[in-house]
Amino acid sequence: MNAMIFAAGLGTRLRPLTNDRPKALVEINGITMLEMALRKMESAGISRVIVNVHHFRDKMLEFIRNYQSATMEVVVSDESDQLLDTGGGLLKARSLFMPDEPILLYNVDIVTTASLPQFIDFHMKYDPLVTMMVKQRPTSRYLMFNKEMHLSGWQNTKTGEKIICREADQYKNFGFQGIHIVSPRIFDLVTENGKFPIMGLYLRLAGNYTFKGYESKNELWFDIGSPEKLEHTKEQLSMLSEEEKKALF
Image (cartoon, rainbow, N blue to C red):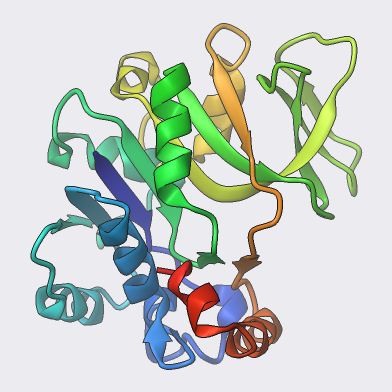
């Protein structure tokens, strides 16, 4: 299976930690976010992973050159000319993926004990266009699913904005975990160009194609979006047993 780690972001919310390094190379208890993500991919049996780079490109390239893996190929998608957001980043990397194979997408600032092999098995069983890892948790922006766990809409509870792409008698709200798998069929459906967010593409297609939600329940999940969240994550991870820490990678 292919994978792509979205690691090109500016890390603005993590300043001043990102004043001299990319967000992906900020450390969590001695291990960079990028290494944590790569090790998790490797242990899940991923064959090839694409890492997009932009901010502090040279430092990212040096890290990737020095990263050792006997079973997984790490390839760079260079966005140094223009930061393309998640949708544009995926589209730019299209030629780098092994053809006709699913692609696991993973935000570099996500840390979780969720099992990627179980998530992959779920996707292979149902073969939707996209499988999204979600969790019932507090957030201001929710993904809405019907009773069959098909993506049906999106809403921002702060602004009141709502998008319904599939009518349902009842909706369940979930927070997106920043981990998803796309079928290679999705490339034939992309009409967007340049820089664009992948969620907009998903909501445009979800009314006509199957986007399946995979609920993560008891697993730990952290979004390293600020220095405060980083410190909280460090504290929580330091309290894990050695057995629990293994699930992070």
